Length: 183
Image (cartoon, rainbow, N blue to C red; front, side, top):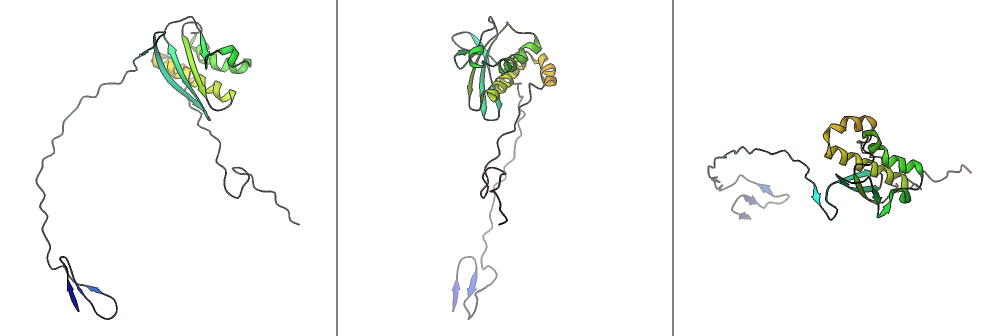
């Protein structure tokens, strides 16, 4: 028994079907289109300050582990720093954490020139302080690019990407296996 299709002829014989060469092939015609390359001048992207109720500010994000800090860096002010609507000393009551947040400003020598508003989410207090430090460093560099080498050398510009490893099946934690007893 022979069946004809548009593309191929298939012979039905006992056993497996056998394909034969195509009967008709339609030639596909593609229209000739010339590609015209247009050179576009790419303008450098410069961070422009955003306006708010207090004035113009530069917005940056700092991260550490699970903590994220959104930093609003106001170019003029008295040196007020607020974290989640609270004063910096009240939010980071431990001196070491308070000092971590202030570190980039101390390094640059701009302790009381700028007002900074920080919103911190996630992580613990230490990670939040380090995320805030990272965000402040980024804002300082956006405000004045000449400060980048000093801040980078101190290690404030580097995002610490170490995060908690996920739990694996058959284990109690990421690496911890169940206790094994020989007898």
